[in-house]
Amino acid sequence: MQNVVPINALFDESFGPNIQDGFDARALMRDAEVIVAVDVMSQKESLVYGRKLLTEMHLGKIPWRDVWMLKVSLDTKSEEFTKLLLLVLATKNVVDYRHHPTAAAS
Image 1: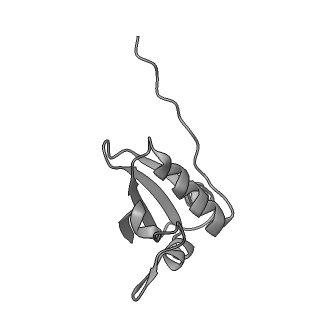
Image 2: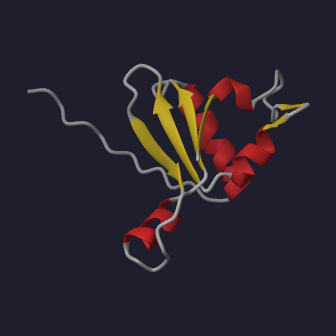
């Protein structure tokens, strides 16, 4: 299952978790087995959380199954990406993001 939410939906006005009737950003983050950042301009996806689960399924250590994936749309070239990484770290106690620099143009 996948959900796509904009980064701003996860925070309230004071940079705390967005908690409203029928929507709790803390629960959304806590329940996600895999979290992916999606750049709004390029649509490039970056794994932020869930590497261990995906690796274990890939290696056959655990059976393949549907995972609860949360996709967060944001501008990866702004502070929004840092906000997501901090939220994941606070919620999951680990961040799986690995920076992959793009090749420089010749």
